Length: 419
Image 1: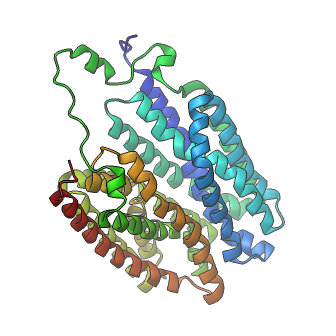
Image 2: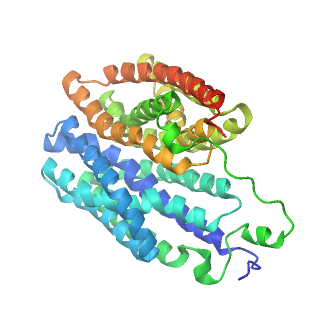
Image 3: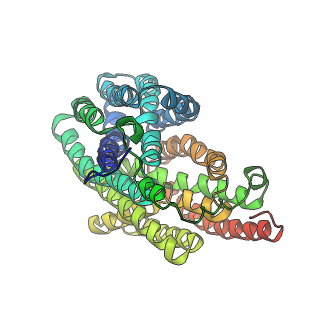
């Protein structure tokens, strides 16, 4: 096998993955928030009751992840991804035909199953297969496209809803995503380079460097030890709170419209939030190398305090509102970037996947609880003010648990368990 082509096919795979996530994760998953207020008002469904479909999605995701992992190892990746995008985007389109909240609960099931393939698992798995070098760069590019996709698609969807109504917009976005993403999958996605006679990017350098010193073994803490440590419990709580905080992003459109802004403005605000996610993903990766994961996480929480402070005091100023939402987008990037970075910083990479998978329970539980929880608070109080004060408290608590987590790491090191 050889990698002598001018442009390695792995880069085309990365483009395919990035475009797929831009439309599925950045488009379908993110723009769903824009429909909440129009659907709630038109069908007279409480915001809490409607947003329960996000919890249904989170539960299905938790249950289906291990099954999807086995299927990806056994079946043709392109067939799985085509089925995945049809399930996800097709179910999203079906929302446009629903007249009862039970329709959202029902179609949230196949939508979540499809999303597990196309928006959650495919990116990391394929990048790991194709990139032995530039792996971090590839992950950064992929996540950047998620932010770009959301930033571009959300304002378009906001205008579609305003001009054509929410039913037509659900159907249009779902069908457009299917029509665009399936050809991308067919043309650009392959499971592994060996399928087309190539080596992964960077592997040729390893092969040619026959006299290189052997790679140093992974260092860190065993998963069984990590799970019993105070650092681990602090990390799980951090995951729960940061995901709960970021979950408010799905309520930005109803929050904006509750303040008197238009659905078009809400769509632009969601786009700004997604742009903040893009900036945050790049910024946190850079800062963690420069000032460390601990200081970067604390910086993120302080940025969140500034954002929520602005939303509590001057949200009636449209310019300040957009700035605050942009800052909040940066903080929301902590879920996808600081989560893995903190896990590595605290426990090393010896058994990273096992530790991270267990700690991520905090992410899943927060997704189930926070999204509908915020909706029910809005139903009871008529505003998101109490939610914003709760987020303010969670940001402060998270600073404390970041500090406690790294104190727990020192205990592991002193005990000789970090090696």
